[in-house]
Image 1 (cartoon, rainbow, N blue to C red):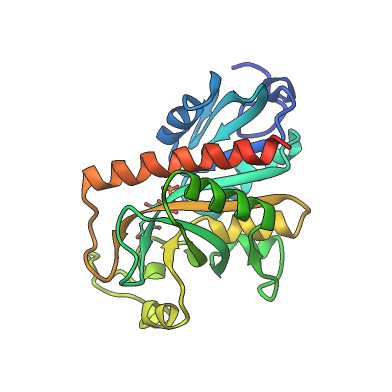
Image 2 (cartoon, rainbow, N blue to C red; image 1 turned 30 degrees about the horizontal axis):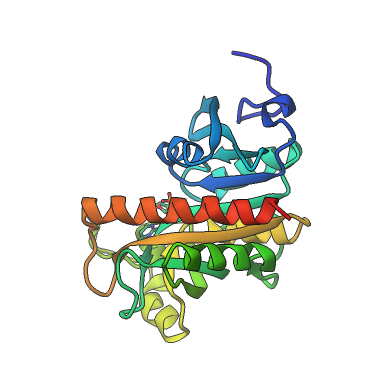
Length: 255
Ligand SMILES: O=P(O)(O)O[C@H]1O[C@H](CO)[C@@H](O)[C@H]1O
Ligand SMILES: O=c1cc[nH]c(=O)[nH]1
């Protein structure tokens, strides 16, 4: 294994070639697809859930690094990328909509997250909001519009768990602890758009430490209609949202 400047990612400062913006999907398999939408894509490292590529936009370096699922691994990826000089993070994910009017395939831009995670509390107390950076949010909205998708812009519920925290009863136990019983209806009544699993940690740790972060997601399932997404629709939603995050990155690094 080659020498690394950080504990987990297997990356050096030199690998990043001065990149200050990172695109951070959850899924390691999404990393190469994103890097290949840019110029000169290069694989840098793959360790555990963290796969990293570097590429260029308008001649400027951008790093793409997966976070894995959930807050704890996201906090590691973001911390180590920040140690290597990254200051702007764009998360691109898949998500489950909870509002009946949001169809599968639509694009969501997250302005803030309900903090149903644990990791964000290691960075700031619960009173502190998990809020996205305004410039990142504007770039994501503009990029979605430029791609012909009018995004839904608003609040996500960001949960440590995929099953109980997102009030799923289709588990082997069929049980959800009292804390989360009825929680989906409550979030719906407050206009929360969707469930995902990393934005609470990402937005809290970035906002509270002087880093910029934004979040865009493709809807792969609508929880008011069904629980299991269709594979073809999932692929379509993913390919649409990765194009949008790359265009947003271009807008953020080119003055
Ligand atoms: O598609 P990604 O980026 O992994 O995002 C979503 O998908 C995973 C759950 O299936 C969670 O990580 C959730 O946030
Ligand atoms: O319902 C969903 C779909 C994707 N990711 C989530 O976290 N929840």
